[in-house]
Length: 330
Image (cartoon, rainbow, N blue to C red):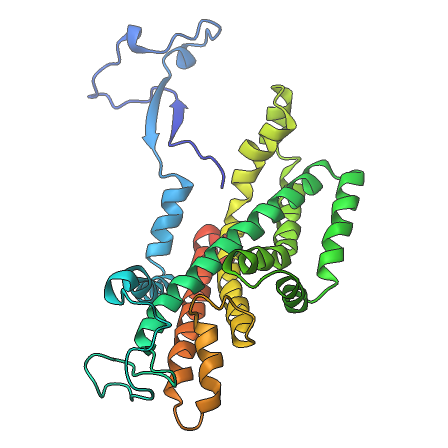
């Protein structure tokens, strides 16, 4: 994001009204090299101007699509945050008779599954697992993508060619197939699944970062930083990367949704962490009773649908807020 100053200086000749108080000569700025009479009476004023971040936040809050996504996401995140207090027991433990229908017993809002486990407890604790994996895997993917795409776009030449071959090598294999192979080789635990999802999603980020860096590396502020003698690392991290963040922020919201779907797919196939409950594992456990107890798959399925929908709505809102020109063109 561009580092817009919080105030701009407006200079001009002192064209004041006849009844306006005269500006004392000693208050005028000392411009010893300017001898023109009008320029000597020029004055400067500080004009407050909102920063880009504040302007983007204001546009995001005024966007009904983004606000709908935020509300839905907050409703899905609240049970995840309150799960240890609402359901302190292990969600994998049997609490009552199996196949208690939803809304039939006050203690079990969404009923119990075939093993007598509380479905509502599974939804709340599964939200913690899904959101944790989604956010952590996105951070891993962003870190790897920036580490590869930034030098490729900044230096170009043989560095760009070598790193692009690495990106193409990873993109040649379908993401989910590569994810299954990595998880199958290692033990299916939450850290392994998180790292595996990050490993299969970083090439998209690398391409996006490379494109942004190639567009920004010849801008005036980068040339000015080079003329001041700044090193490559400082220019990459403190000059170009902040200006390349808006498309990355938009992409991150979609990556979180993708990571949640990938983790759910793995858990549905029985390749999730067996020590935790997730939405995908709940769907996989309830597929055998799809005709007789459809609520076992509908509850976690709707949780996934609403979470992914909220993240996509939020991503669209972020895109409109951070790229207002694109929203006007639509």
